[in-house]
Amino acid sequence: MKNNLFKTIACLAVFSAGIILSGCGTSRKAAIGSAAEAGGGIPLPASAEPTYSSSPASAAVSSALDNKDFYIEIERIVPKKMPPKETLDGYTISIKDNTLNCYLPYIGEVRYSFTNDNAIAIDAKNVPVNMKVTMNPPHKNCYAFIEFTFKSKYNSEIFYFMIDLYKNGTSYIKVESQYRDLITYTGRLEARPEPKQK
Image (cartoon, rainbow, N blue to C red):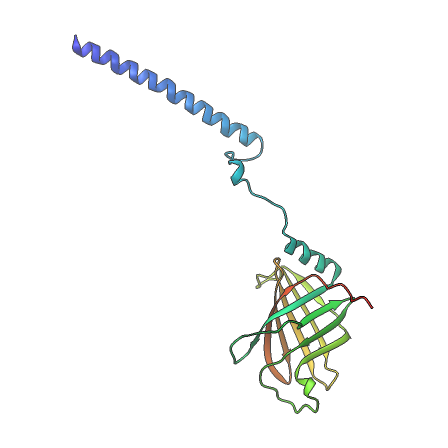
């Protein structure tokens, strides 16, 4: 008698569990199915939903590339054979309307006898340049790679600029010349300052 009673209880327990699991399986499958029909996977909580809005820095980079208008503030100098150095405010690279303006301090070996002390710096004022911009360049992880050359106003020195520009505005600038060691600068793309009122 006891054995029959235990068997009946066990069968009822298994049957009840089957109904509960069946209901859970159906609701789970329905949730997955409705999400799949909507084009997604298992629905995420609202807090976990990804956001796709572009950052202000990314928008500024896109605008600079579209308009070929770059204003980079230099933050650090990285000489070839010396430790990096922080820079003072005021060192910039400006390219607008295919015209370059910059004044960059130089630290490193120079293989030329300059007659003007200012010639040691990398100096350009309203110099026409022909930029080459490569988007998502192979073998690099930057967003855009910018190249151009210009000739020094003091001598026959030719400067070759290579700028790695990232979506967050970070910039790495390498400058080569036949008369000096390669030098690197790090900086950030910034909004061009408004012209001063006269």
